[in-house]
Length: 503
Image (cartoon, rainbow, N blue to C red; front, side, top):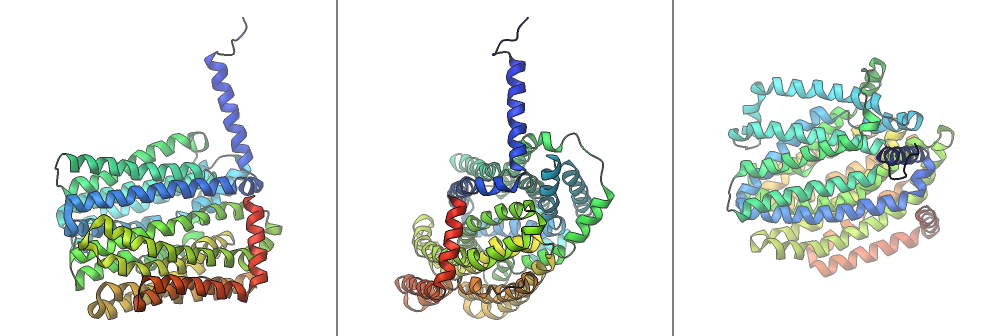
C-alpha cells in the first residue's frame, strides 16, 4: 500500500525534518551574520509593539490604581527584582555554555537542566527563609505586608520566564523571544483592560495579571524548546562547577547593579518624597527602559555570535568590533536617545495628563543614562562574557551602584526627581569610563571613542534643562557632528562593516 502525500504521518515527518534542518543551520556562526538583519528587525519590531503595550498597560494601571497605587505596584516589582538578584545571577551561563552545546550537539539539555537545578536551590532557599526577612523587606521598601505572597509568586514567575528566555537565546531563536515578550505585554493589557472595563479596583489583581502573563510565556517556551531540552539529562557536576565559577563575579555585580538602577531610586524617592512621586518617576523610567531594550536586544544577538566564532579568530573579531563598529553604534544610539527624549516627554504628558507634568523634564536626563549604558549593553558586556571576563561586569556595577546610592542620598532631598535622575547620569558616566578602561586592557586596544560617542545625549539633556527642548535637540545634533568629524575615517569604516553585515 502506497502512502498518500497527504498522509498525516508523512506530513509530520516532513515537518520534523525541516525543523531539524533549520536547527542545524543555526549552529554555524555564519547563520548569525546571514540572519542578523532579519533577527534584529524582528527584535526591534517586537519590542516597539511591546513598548506600545507597556505604555497602554501603564495608562490602564494608573486609571485603575491612581498615582499612589501605581507607585505601590512599582515598589512591589522593584522588591521582586531585588529578590531576583539572588536567583538570576547564574542566568548568563545558559547562553555562555548553551550556545557551545547547541553548536556541538543541536541540544541544550545539559546546561538547561543543570542551571535549572541551581536555580531551584536558590529559589527554595529564598522561599524557606522568607519568614525571617519578609517583614523587614516589606517595611524597608514600603510594600504592604498583605502583598507578600504575591511578591513571592511574582518572583517565581519572572525568574522562570527569564530562564526560558535565556534558553531560547542559547538556541538562537531571537524572533521567538521577541514575539513572546510582545505577547506577554499584550496579555497584561488584555487582563488590565478587563479589570478597568468591569470597574475592578484591586492592586492584587493587577499584580496577578503580570504573574499570569509570565506563566503563559513559560509554557509556550517549554513547548518551543521541547526537542532541545527533552528528554531530561542528569545534572552534570562538572558543569555545575563551571557555571558557579563563571557566574560567581556576577552575583555581587547583579546585586550592586540593582542599586545603580531606578528600582533603588524608587525606594529613595518613597523615603524622601511620596508614593505618587514614585509613580511619576516610574512612568518616565518605564519609557526610558523600554527604549533601552531596543538597543540591548542587539547585545543578545552579539553574544551568541561571539560564542559561535572559532577561538583562533575571536580576538580579531572583538577588536574590529570594538574599534570600528561600536563607536558608530554608540553615536547613532545617543542621537536616537535625544529624539526619544524630545518626542517622549510631550507624548507621555499627553497620554497620562497634567498630574505627570514632571515626566517631560525628568525624561531628558534618563534618556542620557540610556545613551551612556548603550555601548555597555551592546558591546562591552557581550565581549566580556565571550572571553569569560565577568569581573568587568562586576566592577561596572560596583562603581555605578556606589555613586548612585551616594548621589540619591545627597540630591533627592534637595532637588527631588531631577536630582535623582542627574545623579544616575553621573553614576553611569563613571561606570562607563571604568568599563572602557578595563576592556581596553583585556582587548589591548583603545576604545575611548566608543564612550565619547555616547555623549550627545548628555549634552542635549544639559541644554534642555537650561534652555528648553529645542536647545537640547540642537546640542545633540551639534555634538554628534563634532564627534563624527573628529574620527571620520574610523566612523566610515565602521559604517561600511555594519552595512555589509546587514546587507
